[in-house]
Length: 94
Length: 382
Image 1 (cartoon, rainbow over the protein chains, first blue to last red):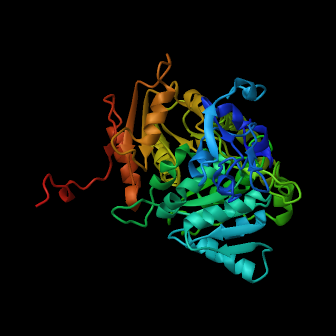
Image 2 (cartoon, rainbow over the protein chains, first blue to last red):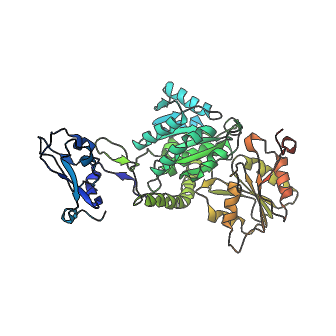
Image 3 (cartoon, rainbow over the protein chains, first blue to last red):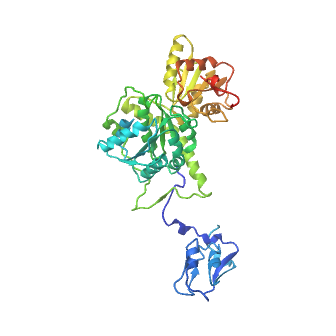
């Protein structure tokens, strides 16, 4: 008999960690952004993307709501806001 | 031992020298250097690295081999658990040796017995022929598609590793017939990438461990089948246990390893005098053949279990398990006494065995040390 033993690459995509958010989620204000990419680097899920100033946002399928992006933003251009239950739909139980 | 490993044709060998294992891997290194064995011998800086190297080798789908002893086996410890947990069919020779402190290079079973819970199969050899044969049987069982579990062949340090005995060495054709080329169920392959040993959170871990436990139960069925096949090819019969003159015995000694040879001689001598004694040799310590032991001992009035290891602060390891076999059973020996013999290479002589038989009375004893020197003991250190 064999138990869970081996995983194929890319399996973390199937783990929709967005469901881990409980009360708050980040909001990217896109007003004073200087495109320093600090939020991109600090995100544990690697789910923040953007190119130019004021274009950065995150993928709520994977955002765990940890708040690191809001904490590190030197321009206070990312803030934590109350969770929107609609964003959690279809992400599973966890 | 090196000769028989050569016949198994491992693709990768990695080991770190430690008495009394050294000459086995030294000889293999020589064979590889001479071109007699097409294998990669990887020199490493420690047993931890040796075990990690063969773990990696088996993971890529190649047959691998390592050997160690005592401190070396303990140093491999965490990798030993990983090899079983990752379901990699490695075969390792443990040249059984005492564990420090005090440092001691001679034989007892403390090293491998201390790692009994790692998920490996532990086979104990009585003589050099059996040690050689158990490696062939070991690879065959380990690599079985229903097992994929590592096997540790335990042979008593010095007594077997350095003993000289005539051994019937099989031919390459015989070995190839019995032990086909290793075809892994899964392997690390850049063309088809997988992750082995990934994090298993509380949602997954228990199932992985349950599967190990369940597979080791299945092993109790497979091992005798493979041993029967071995007997067909090589003509030598082995089993999970060996019942030596136990059928009508009134007193039976249970033991593992080379001491069984000495016990057989004592049994023969006692039988010649009309005394009904016998030996139950445990070959497979893991998986533990509970049912077979029950059948073998249920009608025996007095049983003595010999341990060459301790579980400090509790019952002797083998004795505790033999006793557990009979807990709550209607048919059982009236007395199961436990004796500690031959720690750190102290000779277990025929007289030692006779002393065990003398002490095997209706009064059950637990963890009785045989051949202890009370003059070396003192209550206070001053």
